[in-house]
Length: 150
Ligand SMILES: [Zn+2]
Ligand SMILES: [Zn+2]
Image (cartoon, rainbow, N blue to C red; front, side):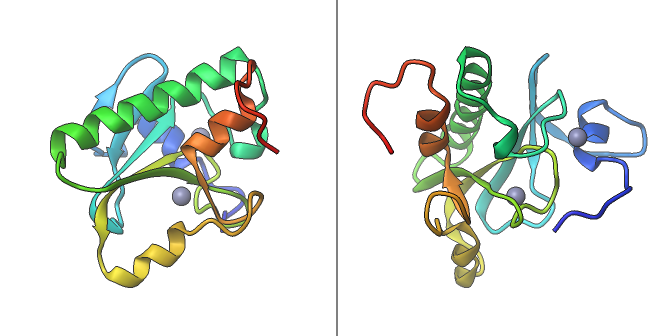
C-alpha cells in the first residue's frame, strides 16, 4: 500500500537523483528499467515511465498512453529475452489498492517464482483487481481495438 507524503521513489530514480544508486538496465527519454529491489522470480525487472503517472487507472484509451505502455512492454520483453531467453515470462501491473508504489510500473518476470508461493502476488483477480496482464491493459487502452474485448 502507498504511504502518503513521501517523495516518489520512482521519480527519484527516473530523475537520477543522487540519493538513489539504482543501476538502470535501460533508459531513454520516456522510460527506464531497473531490477526490483525485492525480486519475486529468477529475473524481476520494473519498467516505469519517466513522467509520473500514478496507476493503471490514470491511463486512458488513446494513442499516447497506448504507445507508452507498448513501449514499456517492448523494453521489458527485450531485457528478459536477453537475460533469460529460456524462461517463461510474465508482464503486468498491480492495480490499486494492491500496488506498492504509486508510480506506474510494469513488472517483468522470468519464471520460476522464488520462492514459489510468490506467484500469488501475480494472479489476476478478475479484471479490476489484482494483477493486470500487460496485454489486457493494452486491449483496454487501444485506440483502435481489433478484437471485441469486454
Ligand atoms: Zn513518481
Ligand atoms: Zn508492483
